[in-house]
Length: 88
Image (cartoon, rainbow, N blue to C red; front, side, top):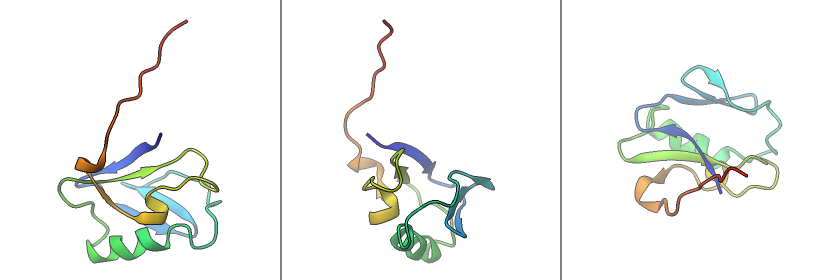
């Protein structure tokens, strides 16, 4: 399960190990060395703006999650499933 952290049109930057979306830091700079390298290279190609139909997903545990930090921006078509929380 991944969390969608940026959608088309959002501005995304990577500064000092932090992922920033629309001017707000999303993590505490504790991403492993090189974790955001692929994403940073892709963002540079798009002037740090998420293209139409694309998004960024991140896992809650950045040190062991395989997510957009590893494989970059993904297409909305790659999403599948739905998370549902049931009340007890």
